[in-house]
Length: 120
Image (tube, rainbow, N blue to C red; front, side, top):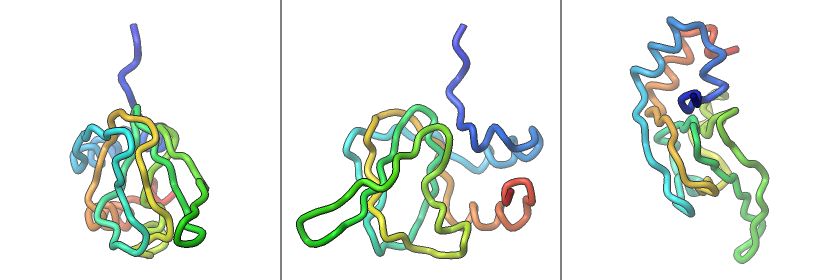
C-alpha cells in the first residue's frame, strides 16, 4: 500500500500545527512548464510540492538564464517571505507536473508569526 503524497517540510510540524496549516491550503494541480512566478512580482502564494517539482531559474541577461534550484516534496517555494521579502529574483517554473499545496502569502506570514514550530 502506498503512502499518500506529502511534503516533508510540513510533515516535520507537530500534528496539531499540521492540521491548522493544511486547513489554510488548497491542493492544486501544477502543469509542466507552468510559470508560477516571474521575478519582481509580489509573491501571492507559497507552494509546498507533493508530487510536483518547481525549478528556480535566475535570469542572467535578456537571453540567458540559469537554474539555481529545484524544489520537490522536501521544501517549499516562497522562502523570501520567511525573511519578510515580498518579491524574489528568480522565476519559478513547474519542471515536473503534479500536485502541490498552495497557501496565500498573507496567510503564510500570519501562520509563520503565530507558529514557532513553523519558524523552525
